[in-house]
Amino acid sequence: MAATIRDIRNRTGLSLATISKYLNGGNVLPENRKAIAEAIEELHYEVNEVARGLATQKSRTIGVLIQTFDNIFMGSIVSNIERILREHNYGTIVCDCQQDKKLEEEEIHFLLGKRVDGIITIPTAGNAGYLQAAVDRKIPIVLLDRTFTDQKFDSILVDNVEAARGAVQILIDHGHTRIAIICGDDSEYTARERLRGYCTALESANIDIEASYIKRGKLSTAHGYESMKELLAMKDRPSAVFFSNYEITLGGIMAINELHVAFPQEISLIGFDNFMLSKVINPKLWMVNQPMETIAQQAAELMLKRLEESGKKGEDYEPETIILPTDMVEGESIRALS
Image (cartoon, rainbow, N blue to C red; front, side):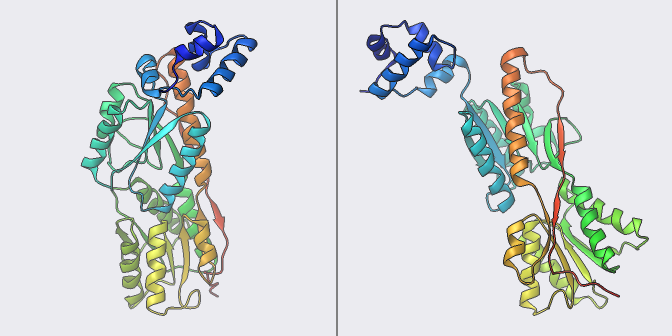
């Protein structure tokens, strides 16, 4: 039979109140702390987190809701969030909504049913409606990689406009004027921002924006693959292509390899999202690199901050938006034109 708090009382002679205070992180006398710790070890006592949650109305669990597990960016973010929260004695429940808006709302209700203390989410929906049940319960919410116009939340973002503008500017600096972009559709916040950065760079250089060079679609390998084939088949095909996320980059490279197109000799490329990919592909790709560990750290720390604040002075606070810079990994995939 598992040991109970009463067994610790019998072993130490201390009151249940003192033992309970110790178990919940309160201050007790050093000699009492030592006696309780020794009793816990000898009795192999384990805290009943379910019972503690019912008593404290806290589960010490954070819900993490993402668009899909089939994504290296999201996988890295979740892994780092879990690690940081674990260091602060919080567990996580990770849900994958498979980029389905209806399932996304169902997963929020699932997490609320598990009595999570907070929710970190990479939204699929274009508005905040799916989060309303959590808002009504005053559950802290942190958005990653997305934001909404209809309601403000704590958000951790990268500067997508500047990341894309800087990438396209590098192509311009190498003499390119026929520059294409393969990006997500207008329903995606990051896709809109990166397309805006692309357009800003071209406009600043007085280069006409060619509609046929803009390939919108799902943020997927298939979209990158098909769009790259379409660009390469054009009579006046672009001399350079900016891939705006990891899956698109991967699909674009697959198409290039399949068609035996040499880069940078025949076409120049710059990718997005994953530093390791630049090391795997030969010639080495120029890549926009997102600070994934920093994104996860900022999200976890902001959630912990909100949970601490809610225990002290209530749930009212002004949402923060933290915008992080990207960096550029130099490669050999861009040809300088005379």
